[in-house]
Image 1: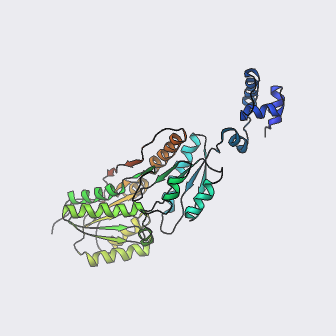
Image 2: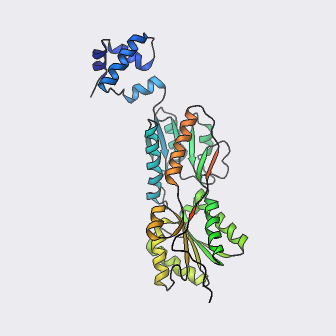
Length: 334
């Protein structure tokens, strides 16, 4: 590993002069600075992170706060995390991943140190208890998700309310009059998780607007729960012909359960989902994609702009794009 003494020897200066060139604490001549920079380049020297932080008053680290609570689908969360990490590296930043459910205490512990320059916060609740702290921090933050009151915050996400509406509108255009939403696990709704609640809002609003009979069924993320949900739906809504699924883990077992109960997809039952594109393509399900790459990338870019002192929009809502596949078809009349 190249040391600061190696740089000093190559540049013909003292180690303290190299340190001053890096930190800017003391003036040095342009000629000396050039020799130091040339030596750094030739040797491939990388200053220690602590030294960089002292020189710039920054750590070049972003915190990604994503508490792994019960009911969340970890593979989808990791798609967002990979996008954040990849984009942060393009901006010469590393990412500190915080997965514990620590609420305000965890945020304050990180923010009160020099560990990170800024924060990205996920798994946002409608009435999120972290909001007062985020509004008061002297470090910029971006929320992936929209609380009930986003004033004074920077938020980005898929427009989940519009996504729920778009799925129902698609089924209504195909002639379906009785629809159901198979949603997230019950604990996700109990916590008031924003994206799940907004899908319900959009689904219900579109069904009411179109005069459709509708029902919402939270579902645990297991194949057994998917089978129970299919049976319950058909008992409660025997005329059911359209289903929207917002629960990636049960999409395939739910389709299997309906077919086991004698309903062909899409001949007897049309299914649309809000899920990752790769899952929808594998199952050939009509879907609205979760734009994890787009959201993660833009969240980091918003932080970089804020760190640079630029004004950014408070709200960035990504409009849903529905891709029609083999799982939806016009309702057959009997």
